[in-house]
Length: 125
Image (cartoon, rainbow, N blue to C red; front, side, top):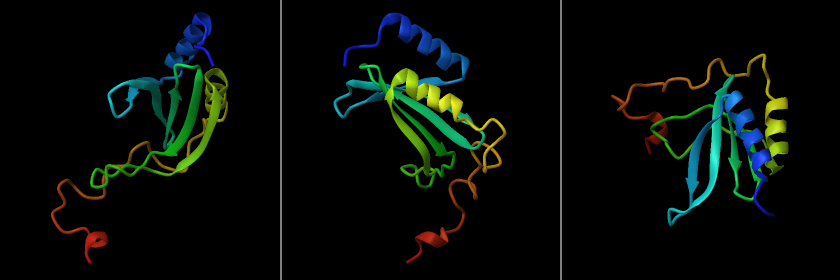
């Protein structure tokens, strides 16, 4: 698939900015740009669009749960779609729950301060 037409890309960028998405580059192991992830936190969820240079995108909504003691883990993926960037963004915006999510706030603070003052019971043999 060829790159997205300039007018379509400009309109997509305007819609992403208006909806509160912020950019973050995504690189491969050699440091080459493979996509741009545009993300926002809403109603207990992290939503992002991984935009490929081809004009395709992966839209994801995941629970906004993160623990700095386990930085490679994140809340569960609730929903995702893949397709043309405009369609993926349309799905993400049209399926957003504007009344609030199950979680009380975007990122809950860690259960304990960092570093933990006592051993984590889950990590004891």
